[in-house]
Amino acid sequence: MIEKRQFYINGAWVDPAQANDFHVIDPSTEDPCAVISLGGQADTDAAVAAAKAALPGWMATPPEERIALVEKLLETFAARAEDMAQATSMEMGAPIDMARQQQVTSGTWHLKNFIRAAKAFQFDKPLGDHAPNDRIIYEAVGVAALITPWNWPQNQITLKVGAAAIAGCTMVLKPSEQSPLNAMIFAECMHEAGFPAGVFNLVNGDGVGVGSQLSAHPDVDMVSFTGSTRAGIAISKSAADTLKKVHLELGGKGANLIFADADEKAVKRGVLHMMNNTGQSCNAPSRMMVEASAYDQAVEIAKETAEKVTVGNAHEEGRHIGPVVNELQWNKIQGLIETGIAEGATLVAGGPGRPEGFNKGYYVRPTVFADVTNDMTIAREEIFGPVLSIMKFKTEEDAVAMANDTVYGLTNYVQTSDPVRANRLARQLRSGMVEMNGQSRAAGSPFGGMKQSGNGREGGVYGIEDFLEVKAVSGWTPE
Picture 1 (cartoon, rainbow, N blue to C red):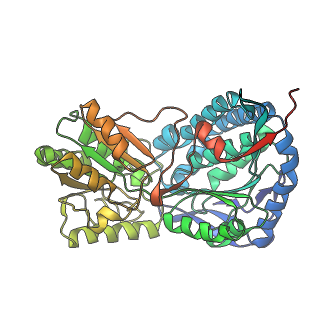
Picture 2: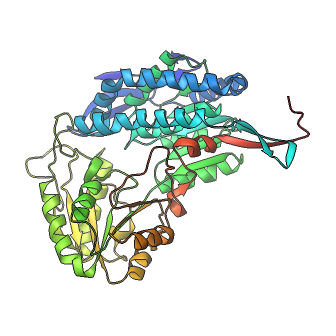
Picture 3: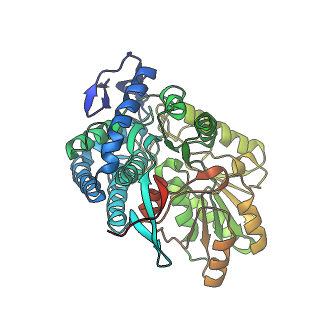
């Protein structure tokens, strides 16, 4: 069993102030795979103090030097790619091929995009030709607490650390206790890259402990959190007493609008997108809304596609989906599947229980419901598992109303061959992102939502700006 009982504080690996062991569970086997320590208030205080002490020097470091260190981080990160993939597969259940090809590479992708965006960013610029003695200076927010989830761990860590480092913020990272091992490898990459002591710190802990302590800490200037809407609300309340900046990337209940003129692969693409990462993605297209004339065929295609999705051990190579992360999530998903059946949705694929051949591990059957209405629980709650709800609409206006009838607003999807309709829908759908006809967002495109999906944006120049304050200076003398 792996033992990781130290924290990375002020440029060194240190023992926790008080031992509080936590067993990390391999969701493929339900067996413990690692033991870590959960931090306490003394550990949080030490990490924040280190970040606060390092802040003046790091803020004053020229942006070119900060960018150069992130470039070095990209090198050290890439060199540890296999270690991170193995850790991610073991601790949160991503199949090893998927961990290599999607989980870890999301980290290198974001770091590359930050570097490109930073080299073109003006941290110091004139207000405009009309005001030659006015200057705009972008300055680091300060000490940033970075709280990341277990479902796409390297994606979220790099989105926060890369942007904060370039902006000149110092950091305390609290990764999910469910997937801490890859984060500790990341800390080793930061150390090897040569970041000054105190710029980056890592303390393991749970949300109730270290997460709450960071959110309320008077010397933390900003909290950047990715996770559940429930936790985001708690963090916002806790942070309010010190008026710190709060950036939230929260849940989603994405609508995938499929019109009769959509391309022939639209339904299959939507199902496979939903099942990717075993449905554990906040931007998953979990509500498939199909035009009435194409509905029956779509249900049949969705059924066939889901039944061909295989489930397997995360340690085995191949194109299968793995388990969900833990018993709590498994029980929640099972309960929602049962609720879908009880509320009258038509089960067309999958269903309750483990897939055939499994009597251990947190495996879920790839599940598809048809005849779902927007008042059903499975249409309103974020399930965070491989469960798709299919709904029917008659008109474009109906589709927009159904899609927007949710507390969430992260990502919506549109499938149609009519470009005028697609552009019209992109403006009407209430979400931070809209992806159309299977085309993914480009490098540097901002990730984030509205309503109860959070605030702020991550990635590229938008992510860097979230860690910066805008300072207006008048009476500036040109040098």
